[in-house]
Image (tube, rainbow, N blue to C red; front, side, top):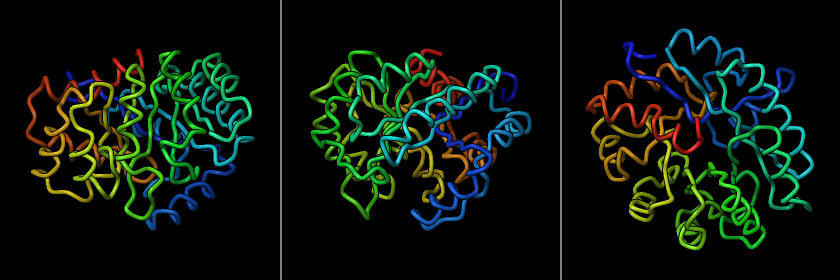
Length: 268
């Protein structure tokens, strides 16, 4: 809790089993050409909760092959169960799975509250026919999708591929990570703002912008469409939260971004 009045949810965190965390983080660092500031372990998030006043973390991981889906979802569910309400678990799917419907039923049975997809790492285009069953079932089941969107090196996650999906599956809620378009932020905002079933988080974006530019991006989408998120372990949730709290938003706007929008989407 910040200042005794702001319940804070970090809506974008990656966690890994202790024995593979360093390898997993190194792989992500190599993919993006960055150096993560933290290690991807659940113990770090528990300490951050105490030191930064973050009340809840939405945690996920990404399956790079279909066979990883069950074990990753079990891990996320187990860590969520052990967290005493600190974590909200989001599952993973892979479009090459032979039983997408079964995978979705399994993650729901595990108590996971949504689905994380990463087109660039999982190597599929957002509008690929293989993904349509995922969208169809998630829409029917009321499962939100946290989607990595945007990368100027790849076309897989280009925002222009997402817009038709949002139009076809109007009952599907999608959260576009990184303001809807990592490294192509302005293009994404022009393409995707004002769509009823689309939200964004602000993860892995602050580093690129001045305070005024961040405020402009948030207001382009609307404060009722933006979720606070940090992309832990790439960035420090404490530092990202401090940056956000220094932006010129009023208390009602902060409450929406810091927790109320996430609560609505994930049924918290």
